[in-house]
Amino acid sequence: MNDPAAHLADTATTAHQLNQVAQPLGYAITYRAGTNIDGSRTDQTFTVHRVDEPVASGPAFYSAADLKAHLEELAALPAWHADLPTIAALDLRGWDHLGPVVVVHAEQPPTVGHRTPQP
Image (cartoon, rainbow, N blue to C red; front, side, top):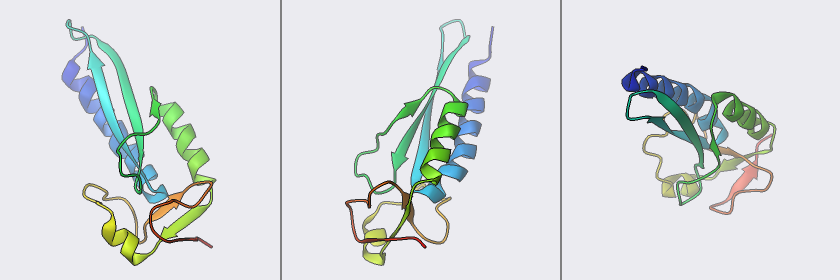
């Protein structure tokens, strides 16, 4: 039998580590860890949320490796800086790994606020 608390702790630690990579890219990671009634580990889900999106939902990944690959793809996309009024309008509670500026890596500029390409 697996320990459900340990499964949850492992998933939370992984999500925290991936948040340190995701947030400077303009994204955050949330997680869910599932267990069976007998305590055996069943799954873990990591969901990606974009800092400038008003609804906290995004693509889900069922392994840390798949999520890491997605973050690498995001890192290769153009980076867009937020202007100060945009930053002031965003609810950034819990976004503690953003870095000195708010940047979103995306193919097209975000639709919220004024953005300029990062050099």
